[in-house]
Image (cartoon, rainbow, N blue to C red):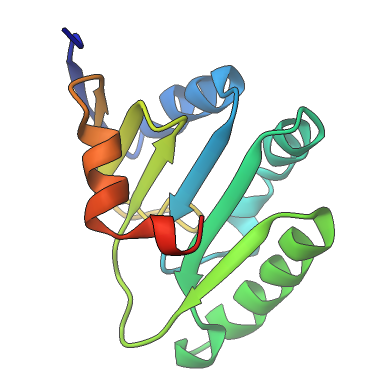
Length: 148
């Protein structure tokens, strides 16, 4: 039987726990975040590089920058270009894409309201589920097998 652990995090505790999960990642990371900002990416570039060098497959699912307003389009476009230059696959979504989640090695699922690739000042909540098949359920529910 697959043991299930669940924990709740806010914007203050999320990144420490999430980065710890990324450090332990062995095979695959899928991050779905509608927004990408330069400021938030500063904290993620080094771990993404290490994972890529280690051979971890990394997939970013995000909103097409053409659907952003204000300065988000330029920040997003620059980050997407840098991610792709690094060898990370970026999948662009249209139609008001707004899901926030991460799947790590198809065993850990993070889901909630926090934009993983852009959050800075907002109050948010994220739930971490490990085991119980929840990560695989989400992968299948979102039909990621079509692309990944």
